Every structure is written in C-alpha cells, then in structure tokens.
Length: 363
Ligand code: NAP
Image (spheres, rainbow, N blue to C red):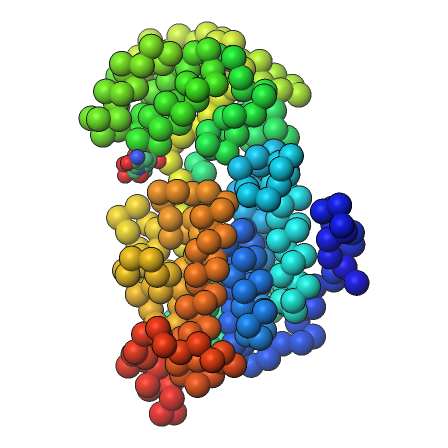
C-alpha cells in the first residue's frame, strides 16, 4: 500500500485510478491540483463522493500542483516542524487524496457548460464528462516580468520569488539587500514584510507614482529600510545558481545599470485561472470567482463551488487554500445531500436548491 512512512516521507506513490473507472454523471469533479483541490478531494473521498480530480497537464506555463511547485522551502504550513518543499507537500496531499479513492485525470478542463445540469465539462483530449457538482480550484498565477533568468531562478529556489510571506523568512534572504518590483498594494505589503529580514529593501517601480493605497504607500515611503527606485524596470536577473543582482533600465533616460541584490520579489499582480469558465461564473473586478456569501465557497452557480486562490485575492496562502478546499467539499456534500444524491447525512445547513436544480430533478 502506498502512503506515508512513519518518518513522514512518501513511501510509495499510490497509483491514481484513472478513466477506467469513470461514472456518468460524476458526482463531484474537482478542477485543479493545488492545496485547495487536494484538500477538497481528501474530504470528498472520505465522504464517499468518489471525486475525480482534473489535475491538468504539464505545460510551459503551468506545472500541475499549483504555485507551490515553484516554491522551494515551505516553513509555514502547520505540521512540518522542519519545513517541507513545495513539490513534496503537493505530493503528500495528492497521495493522501488518492489513498481515499480519489481518481485523478492528468488533463485540463478546457471548457465548461454550467447552463445545464448535470454540468458538462470538456477535457482537453478525452470525451466530455457530466458532473453533479464541481469545485473550481484552479488557482491564480503570479504575474512574472518575463525577463531572462527570472522564472528559471524562481523555480530552482535561486532567490527569485513572487511571495514574500512564503519565502522572505528563508535564511537565503536574511541580512541582504532585497528588491521588490511593483507599485501596488501587494508590492507595498511585500516590501514592508521583507524589512523584518533584510538590511535594505529597494522598491523598484516603473513610474514615479505608486498605484498603492495612500496608507500603504505612506507606510512604505516613511520606512527607514525601504528605498524607492523610481522610473525603473528590471530587464534581466543576474546570476547562474542564485541571484547576484538585477540589470535595470531607467524608463525615462533608457540608461541601463547593474544593481547587486540578494533576492528579487515580483509583486506585479496575479491572474486567476478562470479563462476556461468563459464568463459562466460571476467574478470580482479583478477576475476572482465571487463567492457571494461570507464564509461560503458557493459561487453564483448553484452546485459549483470555488476554493483556493481562484477565489481568494487576499490571503493567498497554502493553508488558507487548503481551508477553503475543505469548505468547498463540505458544501458540495451538503448540496448533494439536499438533492438526495449524496450519501451524507449532513443536511441541516444546505441552501435551498435553485431553479436549475429543480428543472434537473423534474427531467
Ligand atoms: P495592482 O494593484 O494591479 O498593481 C500592480 C503593480 O505592478 C502596478 O504598480 C503596476 O505598475 C506594476 N506592474 C504591472 N505589470 C508590470 C510589469 N510588467 N513591469 C513592472 N511593473 C508592473 O496589483 P496588486 O498590487 O497585486 O493588487 C491587486 C488588488 O489587490 C488591488 O486592488 C489591491 O488594492 C489589492 N490588495 C490589497 C491589499 C491590502 O489591502 N492590504 C494587499 C494586496 C493587494 P503601474 O502602476 O505602472 O501600472
């Protein structure tokens, strides 16, 4: 049997059960493969919902496993006293989900039709599938500058990151001069956070005016450890195994120079992975899936739930993603139970089924 050895290491990866075992309609389809998706799968599988996870296929832009696949050391996920690498954490969550019977398909969902029930989902290569409930847990990707060496060093833990809260406290970044790129609230937060560890934080912004809220901007500009570098963009990250500096260009004069830094944090926004939804769920002005009720993961479409960074532009942490994954699975279970479809005795907090569901029941 696969699973975790007593020392916490992955002993043997259980083989995912794949399409041989498909059902129509599927009870629950989970789209995504980050902490929210696997946590939803663990809860749903243990509740006998027989979830199938579409974890996606590797591509140049995306590795299944979400943003943690780009993180080396994770020190703030509870339960790992000595930390864990992002990929190892994802392996463990995935293995745990499979252990309880989660089926895994290594494909993307290319498009969805939520206007009918059962919902219809189109995987990238195989035949369409139907689903009674869906959890969208496709995450958000950090925007990168797209300059030479940036993503390579980010992937190998070479001192480039898109998350100061995740990586800033690592020994490699302590007592160094660090650079943060961006002029929005995220960049302000990252710069302020990094002052705990760095000797100096250089805030590199392409204009001479910040986009951030006044209060955040004031806090940053008054901070003795933060030096703004205006009208400047990064054109290359320097260093082979680890960052040694950045090549910058003045956006007014065009002059280029090299700036030695011990770490680079990119904070130029995130893009939630929602394109495949084709506008069928309501989203916020920044494109994140709306979950209209506080402390709920139900979306604007009854029977469709959202978890993780695709619905959270505020916390964006692995542990909060996992938390919303748990919430989504419980809500999906209750929704199914309310329709008399699940095997769960949990009924009391279910929302009233909506027109769409009633139509489906009648058919
Ligand atoms: P944002 O507000 O869109 O700001 C992105 C920043 O990155 C802008 O300053 C932009 O420059 C810069 N930028 C974009 N592309 C760039 C590129 N290719 N090269 C260099 N610079 C680039 O994104 P955000 O800061 O992630 O914030 C997103 C939303 O979350 C906002 O509504 C924000 O208020 C909110 N938020 C709130 C908090 C908080 O309240 N504590 C914390 C974080 C985020 P330009 O200004 O020149 O366009």
